[in-house]
Image (cartoon, rainbow, N blue to C red):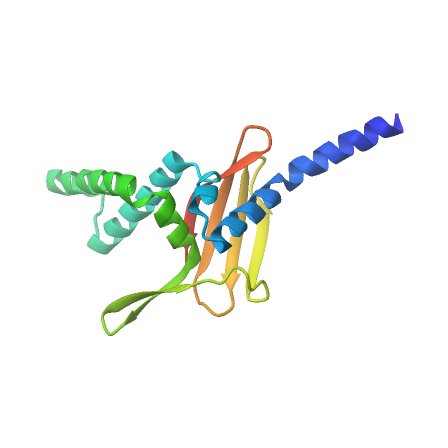
Length: 172
């Protein structure tokens, strides 16, 4: 009976640790610039949808579209924005681009030239991560780098029993 209890406890601990194991593999792929390995941990349809929604919300906020008090033209512009955001994500969210986005900690605007400063995931002293279960099937990794103002918030969702995949990434 003791062996059975220990076995059940070990299985439960393994299941609870699987998002941390997945996060380790994601960071290893980012650090080694292995976009093929990284793409194994990404749910592209959900990620495209979520990033498309973020893009549409940003455009809607910038333009100032008020969908509650809107007329035909405003509704047409809003729908066009949704279509553009959805279609653009099909071309933007690729294994190479997601790898670049996760490695890029910040975009700088110096003299009208955009440059990428890459986060160094191998320097663990500078990277601080917070891990949280947001529910039984949702896990969030918040990545702070002390040399940069931005942070990455990575949402992992459970697929199957022990597999987790990235479904959303935000930078703030």
